[in-house]
Length: 480
Image (tube, rainbow, N blue to C red; front, side):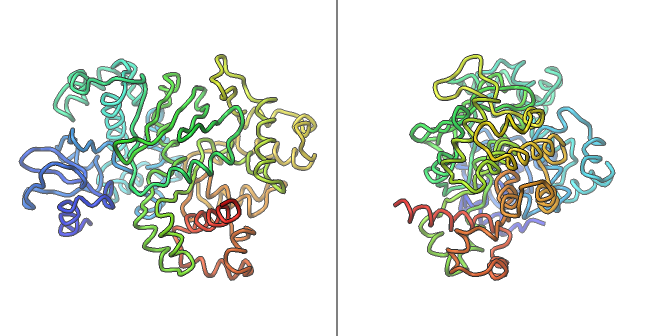
């Protein structure tokens, strides 16, 4: 349950740490806002607090046009909701209900549809369908503000199959037709551009440096403070450009219109890649209790854990990097792409290929894979990894970390370090922890792995952030 006193105090202070954790509906206006909204603070007796934007909308409130609730950062479900609802939320955010029904979603999660509906109602205040509908409308509203996509294309990009249905739901939810909001927004710029809000502080330079050191030639490129890459998702391929927003705590994403049919899952993957849903204040409150980590948090308060656009790409990159330097692994990844990746019909400067899919690598003979400069055993391991990732249960957006790691370590050539690193990167789990990492052990005084695990218990559920802080300290001391 939400504490009304705490929520109102956060609202009155416009405390950014609570952005996305709750929303406030105002009885006199019928509008709901984020706690950081710049509008005049309403009287307390006029406020009702909700756990999600979907819950506020179900109560009859319309989204504020000033603070734009659809831009609020996510609420890190791993720490706030049970595993079932977290899994349902992740799949809905990736657009699962755009193509499937609630019964199929429930089967994927291993429960009955009735139990899933009851769980989401209890924890989020809305049903799975209402949550998906709220996500679609929020994305559509954002596209009306930030893009120049025609209304028909915009409706389909937001996950609606029927433009008529989209128009009716939008009118009912926001009190005006979508065309009127488009005229009011008077959008200019790229056809498909989005603002991805986040909770500050946000250390973009260090996140970019991490990605730059591991950028795959032909697929990714960093130019100044801009990150560009080719995305291949759901059979659609195109470039994405990410850069910091100069006016808001946000990232601007310019997305090729060819990716519009998979926009909802793409946005979820971009947020995961850049760790935009992190809670810096919550993370620091836990990790700063450790005297080894406290000064690191003060020096780098906005450090994020980089995720991955494509779990298989991250996994293949990790296997290529076994027993070689980061630079050598990048070279091998570039060779893999140049030989087996699909060339773009229209290359864009440094972007020339998409990364090969798991199914494509699985069909390549081991000697051919080894020809890029791999030992036979590692080439065989890469092929086995690819065959494992052709299983949707391993490559899907929501995985149990323990089952995921166990499935990986059962493969030839994949040890515990690689599996835990991929829990951290490919799953983007905030508690991913490669306890046997040599840099980590050195940073903690050369302790044995068991002692490191014991010490790290106090870092839960944010062990991945502790690892990134210690890795970053090591890298910057080695290359000041």
